[in-house]
Length: 96
Image (cartoon, rainbow, N blue to C red; front, side):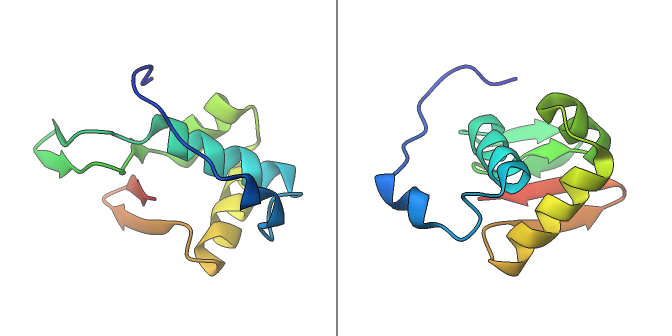
């Protein structure tokens, strides 16, 4: 888990359509907090700044949500283009 650097939020996030949906908010902020802040290699794949390699199961464990709750939250985020979800051989990259 990344523990270096800062994530900056604007106060207007309280006006975001998913702000009151605690599961979407939790997944969104968790992905922001855990996204790479520098480019890194992982198993021959370049993971760029702002991306994260994970799985639904890992996200569920990390956020204390069920896999279905994480899946639903990601679908909602995709609808608002807050998340660009690309699946590559069971690997999930999340752009922010």
